[in-house]
Image 1: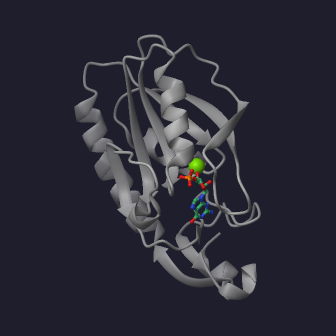
Image 2 (image 1 turned 90 degrees about the horizontal axis):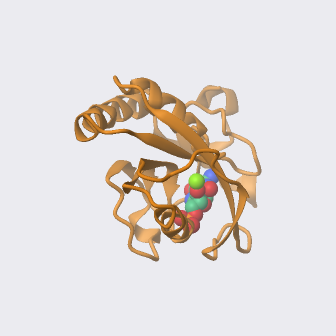
Length: 183
Ligand code: 5GP
Ligand code: MG
């Protein structure tokens, strides 16, 4: 689905499919170099990270393991509390693994902060973060992702895996919603 198919729903397109793919390819080249000679396990956070995971994993020139987690953050509406419940745990054992958490967006950082502590406690060799998007102005806890696709303004965005009320995940670009959609 392209922006033209949801015309009227979007206020504006923030990142085109081409911009996203170019940036993911650049970061994949870095990851290939950084993890050369080491094992790599990509951990995707459902459901938002599905598109990022699919494109990042295929952009790598090496083989990588992939696993998935689903977590839910107790919070009211669009703000997260940092209190997290595991809805679906990993299937793989993390002992001695080099884990790269793959995220769609880093907002307050509260959910990810909890997740990083949880993963690190499982005997990993290393845990790093890849996030396609980051909202620097929304950050409440300090997290230093090793790989960041784009820093974006503190606005609610949809597309490329990110939803509003489960919709727009299959939009190829990332855009902001027109106010009449959520008011
Ligand atoms: P955090 O704990 O960092 O505040 O929460 C991050 C999660 O909130 C993301 O994984 C995502 O599910 C959701 N989120 C944060 N900002 C946005 C946004 O602009 N658009 C959408 N669709 N989801 C967001
Ligand atoms: Mg997420």
